[in-house]
Image (cartoon, rainbow, N blue to C red; front, side):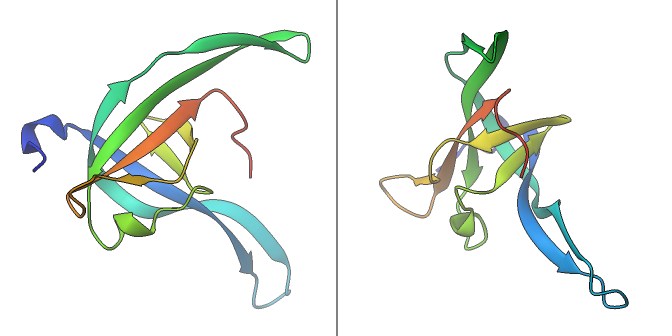
Amino acid sequence: MIDAGKLRQRVFVQRYVETIDEDTGYRTQTWVNHLGPLPAEWKAGPGREYLASESLRAEVQGRFIVRWSPDTAGIRFTDRVLWDGQIYELKSDPLVDPSARRQVTLMVARGVAQGG
């Protein structure tokens, strides 16, 4: 069971969707809040710096742990997490704990490909 006291952060899971304007038929793609705010625990992992396109880039890695629910079980690798004004991309499919249906771990990184 997840200790509720550890779930101090509030995150949004965003999904990249396409909408069609009914009047013009114009298609627009944008990130929308799919889930949230979700109580989550943040666990920082190792960060790294690397050289890309002749500029130094930084990547923060870590994980968010959220309670399992049918909604959180539907989080996809293509979604992203918004926390405290920062965007984190998912680095893998969400991981469900071995006991199943207690928690979902979202492995994330910030500072890399954040567009859609």
